[in-house]
Image 1 (cartoon, rainbow, N blue to C red):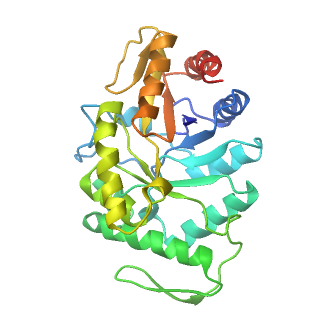
Image 2: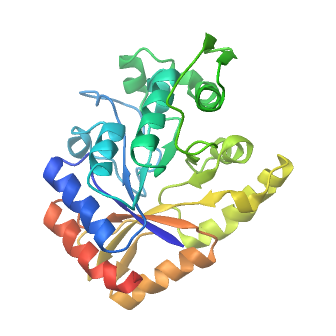
Length: 303
């Protein structure tokens, strides 16, 4: 099981020094990947319910600052050599798919094939409204968006004629560093998300899903993958959860908390439930020093 670290491009204290120090510390610790999140704008007020509010509360004040994820990863790529560079998650339908394809292919080239593109349909209606994207169509838009991106990555002359996107014959280069393109992981744990993973995803990236629930959902997903005529072994299972040592002030369900042996047991439980890569949110998350201290404790346990 691989391990990745969220490097906090969205915190109030985020900035070039904090992002880079977390990324370099992750690579130095021998972990496998670094991850960034995405919002283009944060509405001044909104009524949309956050899908995981009870499990992992969403604080608008903590999410006003958002460094653009792919540019952030390009910055990290220039100073690292080994860790994979992932989005957890990006909202591609808020951009044109040709622009997504160009940015990700460029980053994959410049990083020598280290990109993982985690995508999701989104939940914040007011953000979609602000950018003129129909929220009710976000699922079909995402499906077509992925199809257009893959067409541009793979075809010498790409075309597409869908319900939402149309491309005349065009060329787009550079292609990604890998002939198959970067893997595309689908975020979310809803039935629609599982169906999307089975049909078109290279991996599944749920949040706040603990080992017991994962042990139920992974066989369900594998059944859907087989029904789609695909090999379940080819699908990465990559949940995201919090990790903290000692007795943190805030505990979210399905996080890894406590003494080192308890955290190690939690990691093993995720692996046994079918996890191929676990993405960790270091806690406490209210400062860079807090996150670095947790990473320092985690590193010798996973070596």
